[in-house]
Amino acid sequence: MVIVVLGTIVILASPSWRGSRIKSELDSDTRTLVDTLKRAQNNATTGEGFTNWGVRFDNTGPTPFFQLFSGPNWTSGNKYEYFPLTFGVMFASPASGAAEEITFDLRTGKRTAGTSSIVIRNVDNTSLTRTIYVSSEGAVSTN
Image (cartoon, rainbow, N blue to C red; front, top):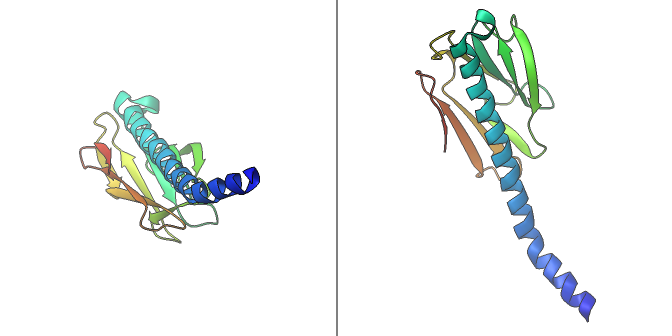
């Protein structure tokens, strides 16, 4: 009888636990993404390396990722920390097969190039999304 009761509790709690875990993974990736953007902006503002800094959001391969870089762009710049998205999280923007960059100007920290928002979502529940905005002035926010 105890095993039946425990089994029932596990079955009833499982969807709730899974939903909580999925939301937690999405929130964790959002925090890391925002922190990386703010770090790029801070590095540009303080003149680290005497160059612009940015973040590339890459959705071209089997593992979507974002990466901190310094220089005019990701291709010709120096690449630093690499962050693959958590399993079960993917980019909605940039779209599959695309990549985008957000670059911050040396000293001013304003966005010099790139998109104004990045969207990540859960693979299974596409309505569960997070949007990260970067204003032209360089302010980073999320919904």
